[in-house]
Length: 377
Ligand SMILES: Cc1cc2nc3c(=O)[nH]c(=O)nc-3n(C[C@H](O)[C@H](O)[C@H](O)COP(=O)(O)OP(=O)(O)OC[C@H]3O[C@@H](n4cnc5c(N)ncnc54)[C@H](O)[C@@H]3O)c2cc1C
Image (cartoon, rainbow, N blue to C red):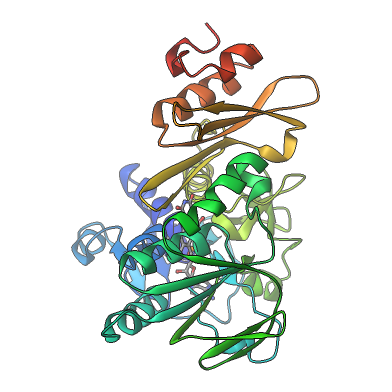
């Protein structure tokens, strides 16, 4: 009997199941995940809330089996009728200092529930130390501050995320933490205790310590199955493993050969759409120009394209002298990326421009009176 077994109920695994249901896949579909009812990760750092993608009844009505288990041993598919899909996502990087394991990560529903309980238990605002000021660390620092905590954000750089947001916007956003009452510390963490962190020899006390220092692809099962793994489970453009064409890998755990690994929500969804096309034997869906968002201090930050390709940036300021958008241009002067604050229309416009290989003049890019729709016209 035809079957698809999806390991991992994150956005990639769930989205694949949804596509297969919508496309009337004639075989059995099951998702294994120890965390139970599949839920979305971005709300964890923005609100500490757990948002399931669909109620249990959706799985029941559509005959999608949900198996609440940590899969430790697997067999490769035995026939061309069976598909195995690894959608195992990422695990938080370990903080490699004395006591590093005592810092809590923020990656799962259980982490969010634990952190939420600690924040709620302090009468006058808990002291919170956040190690790492990347996307998750910065978002959580903002969320904790809004809940009344006294927050200190520790980072090893004055412009964390410069490689994904562009230097200028990364600096402005990091400086904004102080404007919102968050203390920032630049330095190296050398020790963590149950209620303290040592940064550059200085001891800082707190009721809650959260480490958000990045993630690693979860590849243990792929390795156990003997699949090719190199900074992610290697796949081709159809999401197939080069080691076994009945095994697909999607989402944050997967990496397309000769490309950097994408670790964003939308690219995980697009991998899932491609995996559904591979299984159903339908035409490959179109891939978008990369995009992700982040929310902090009531600002919506978006990045389109790839700042690693940019060799120079052009900055557009708003009337209050703050950076609104940073555009990245490559060595040929072509537009390859942009980051913006509260600029949904600009994000759409830049996507269109990159897709069509259009680059507005530097004067147009800089000029805040040239609206997103007029750019490049
Ligand atoms: C706190 C947080 C905030 C984020 N915010 C944003 C954002 O604002 N914007 C953005 O673009 N991206 C954001 N991301 C990234 C985004 O959530 C990920 O890119 C996305 O979740 C990747 O989906 P995935 O399905 O590949 O993996 P995951 O969501 O990590 O899901 C993988 C699942 O696989 C399961 N699994 C792993 N191994 C096994 C096993 N052996 N057996 C059974 N199950 C297993 C895990 O339990 C997990 O549920 C955020 C991530 C986090 C953690």
